[in-house]
Image (tube, rainbow, N blue to C red):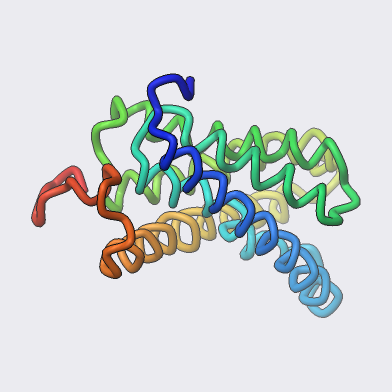
Amino acid sequence: MLKSWKLKEVVLMSLFAVVFGIVYLLFLHVANIWAALIGPLAYEWMFGIWFIVSIICMYIIRRPGAAVLSETMAAAIEVLIGNAVGPRLILSGVIQGLGAEAAFALTGYKHFNILVLMLAGIGSAVFSFVYGYFVSGYAALDPSFVALMFTIRVLSGAVIAGIGGKYIGDALLATGSLRGYAIARTKKGDVNA
């Protein structure tokens, strides 16, 4: 998969994975505090932050595998620096990354507009929710509460990961630090951007 990648693309993806592995662990603590105040729905609205690296990396690098690899690496980093969930969290990263990757694959890796980025965030939300449904025992909860959890997670994926990922990518592009990456080769006004 990485055979056709440039070294700088692998390095950038790895850098984002380390940074967001740290961010993910920090937001876990924020979510735990928030959940103590309002209950388990606190995690749902924050899930988008845990999907964002896959969208940022794909938006910038635009190569098949960028979403799933970056999300998996970030999850592994998070485990290495102290998340007690362990290998199951790495599997979650793979699943979340596959959800985002599926959205980009549907477009043939040719479209990177805001709607596709939001769809990638939604894909991560749906894939992670299905996984969580079976692993975390959501079936024991009231169906209306499960539907609310799902809705909030999907919105979080679309807004925080999709729109937030585009915002971060565009902000980095504006600094000039992404010259030489696929995102910089997109012409202004391009519908694929």
